[in-house]
Image (cartoon, rainbow, N blue to C red; front, top):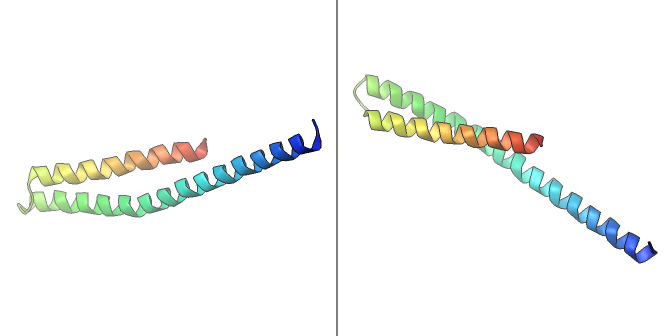
Length: 85
């Protein structure tokens, strides 16, 4: 390999490494935002359950809150696996 080829390969590797770091940072940022969203969704789910017992919410409201919570939980689990890989 000559100097130019070696230089180009090093630049390509640096670029790939930079892109990988940026992608990891984006995933970590999304995971952090999901944490707060997940807590809010769980709180909403608990409020919906309490409201249903008090007659203020329907079963549909409880199911909707539960689905929102579970969707975020699945997304967080998926992101965690992706970050670990």
